[in-house]
Image 1 (tube, one colour):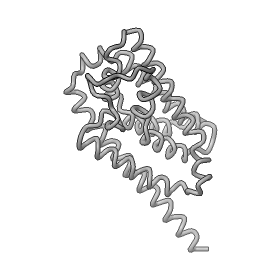
Image 2 (cartoon, one colour; image 1 turned 120 degrees about the vertical axis):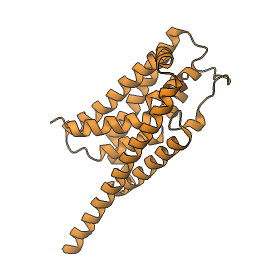
Image 3 (cartoon, helix red, strand yellow; image 1 turned 60 degrees about the vertical axis):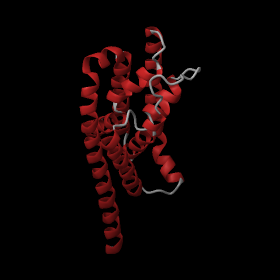
Length: 216
């Protein structure tokens, strides 16, 4: 059965990490010399690549944890700490993406190759924070309906991302830098709250396991 709570949690968490508001500025910087048609192509490929990569992470996330012998509560705590660090970085300096240090600034030399998959989709849009968030959410999957909800949350974010990039020029003209400057701290605070909740959930689950073991 479809899990609406998991869908909503996945959508909100990934939306905060992917940050379509500032992904637009990265996209415009990287495609400054491209034609409108080429920008549309890059936007579509980048969005599809982001969705595909995160869906793969959702599918094999639990297997990765099992392979390294990592328990879900421990990963939730570690993932929450990483997301909290990303949120604090966004609040401090305003990331243009979760990997802003890799952003190509306006006027910089553009790479001669196709930039839709690399570096735009990965790692500028879908970076470590996105993958950590997806794998943490995948730890809540216990049925096909849960996986469907998780995948739907990823695809919904990819659609929002595609719309943001496809209409990036118009979007940037309408909202301006002021909205981006206001929106980023709000997303950062939301992401920080999600991160803290993940840490507390991981700690609570681990403590409950220890208590159950001691009671035996």
